[in-house]
Length: 117
Length: 110
Image 1 (cartoon, rainbow over the protein chains, first blue to last red):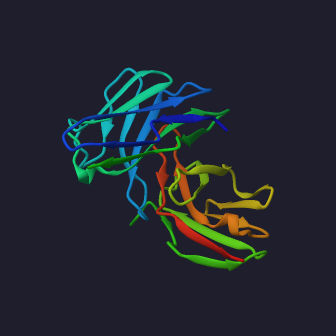
Image 2 (spheres, each protein chain N blue to C red):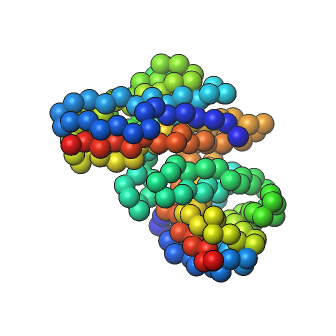
Image 3 (cartoon, rainbow over the protein chains, first blue to last red):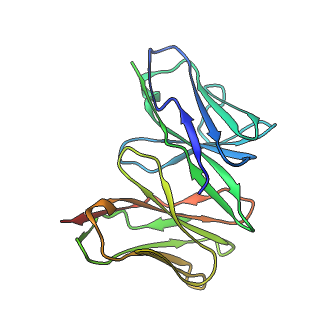
């Protein structure tokens, strides 16, 4: 299957600072990437859909000014958590959509564990 | 009504048994169906995809799709403790976002 990388895998930051997370599709081009967050023992929660060259589409209840998404190329999307607070501590996972012969498949990055102190 | 439903579990099976995981979906226009495995603290990993009615086998895994009844299942034969994880069902209509179920937690007891 396709490979998606995410960096960093873990980050600890102080309250009020910003953190950038990168998501890369390594062996395919992804016009669409997705950002999820997941709390312990909870389901994946879609935060936003990132489209190359256009603005991200945010899910209801997700603050677009707090979670900045940039999809500058067909292989890279970034999520910046601005003015982080302890309640932003979570597991952030990106995924990328790849087009097979006639179906889409979605592959996940390994995730970034963010801890805000 | 939730779009994709799964029994949250935990589903416990003894080692060597067949684990059967079920998923129902509400969108009749769904065309692609997927099973992901997620170990604790890790991200989901795609393990099976199925697009037409019937069975699809890959090693110890068999995915079954019944579009008329709007359900998809995953069978794991000869279950191993290493299969213990949460299994996510996902469905997709072409061009739209994937919709994930809440996942079923599987525990394989040695």
